[in-house]
Image 1 (cartoon, rainbow, N blue to C red):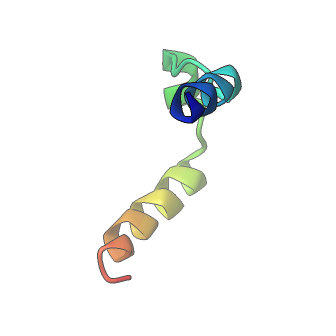
Image 2: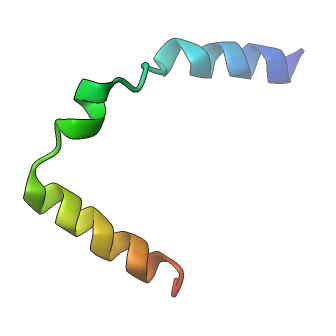
Length: 43
């Protein structure tokens, strides 16, 4: 029951990933995210 309630609470906070969300990032933000993904394996 706790897991179901927790999942319901999380789903209320979620938002759908649309094309606008995916492409709405600036070039600087995408470049920063690229570097973070490269170094994430080292942590």
